[in-house]
Amino acid sequence: MNFNYCIKKNICIFSIEGRFIEDEASEFESCVDELLDNPECQAFLINLKDTRYVTSLGVGMLIIFFKKAHAKSTPFGLCHVNDEIYNSFKSSNLQKILPIYKTEDDGLMNLG
Image (tube, rainbow, N blue to C red; front, side, top):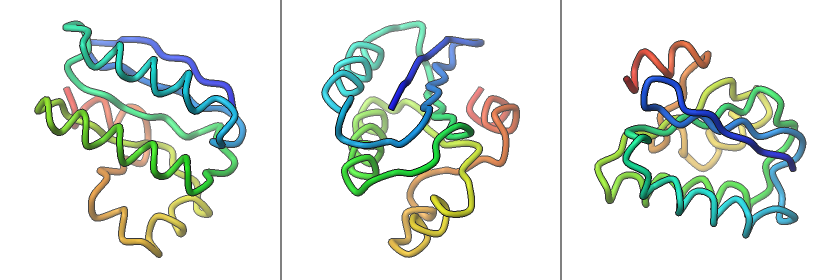
């Protein structure tokens, strides 16, 4: 998994490429914790456009990220979720908890 982020209009956009698996989990979590304390980041959008697969650990990390953002009253959402990942979220009813937007622009408009 590779990830990077940028900040647009006070929304921190994470892009995750490849498979969202255990390999980079601690680095991802450290980055998330740091950005949650950054006053420039008033919302978070996770772009899964280039994500092929999310393991159960990856799902768990997204839920933890959502809970941490929610605890700080910071809006959070996902975008560009492919059908396979969406179906795995749906089987656990996660699509009811995690806001999912069709495109990055949709997410930016709703979170901004």
